[in-house]
Length: 430
Ligand code: ZN
Image 1 (spheres, rainbow, N blue to C red):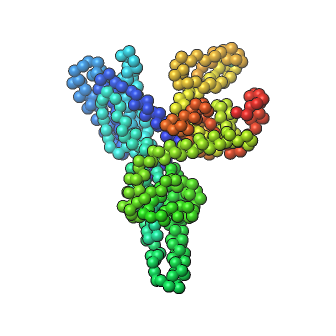
Image 2: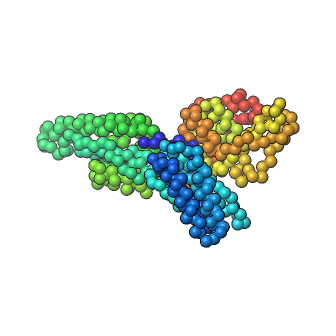
Image 3: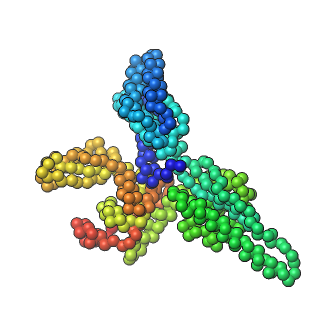
């Protein structure tokens, strides 16, 4: 099973897809190629050569030329390969419209997060991205837990696939036993048996879910009020308890069929749940901001960067809509070697002219350009911070984007910024 994507990888992949989605060809001259890892390289090159030969039948000279150039480009990418990477490859090449009927040859080589299952060659006026998009959502993993007093089932939802991992029945007797004096004693024994049963269920949940990385949440369901009791009485391991999705789901069954019911009922709200998790984090940030003393919020790019550098960030919040590029400048004078950093809006990058070196007056050149969300999330992940990339759909997402410039953090401990960032001057509390 392929490892879960980190938030930064997921973001990177999403942005790549966005770029590809925008690309349009003048005619059916954009080539999409999906190659499974098991495919032999020479099979693919042979296939492309035969497509190249067939394309000589294309009537329009322009289209023919462009299709052939795209295929040539794809062939060029394969030239030095002996085998394909573990997940295969997705290749997108062609003359992409840039406006004013101008085109530019683009080639994107993607190593997908999951294995490509079937070979696909398409020539169209857009790139074919459905396979890759599917891989993005298939990475979302939810734990499923159905429980009542008689039965319990534990399963997993991976993308759209439901998998049963454990099932058992209890020995808890029915509530209505005998009447009379011994009834109360009997009922107490039943409750003890039921609690033992819930403990067993929770133990299995711990064994299955706790070691799982990237588990987004746990959906709990069942026919009666038992599921609520099970959750409220915190039978689950505290790490799992935190992942239980607030809403509990009424299902008719507690077996494998119940798992399907659970997913069906939860399906409509899974997207909302994702948004709800993001909202929770923004609300926590706001709580920290409101504290008059000892608040653990940090915002303002310079402060967030500093806190990340110190490894002081517990949770990093980034707006998906940030669209900022981080530019590394290098002085061209060899003796100087000065470097500077600048952050620009994505649309400003093309027109950007670097300043003269403040140290020696030489030209400065752009040495590196990185998407800020990607840069900061990689930085955060490397120091064990949780990264939450917040979409703009919710009010909280908008707050993060507008009031906090799209980036903020919740700190692990208080940082004296005046001390660690003397250049920021007094009143440096962000
Ligand atoms: Zn310089």
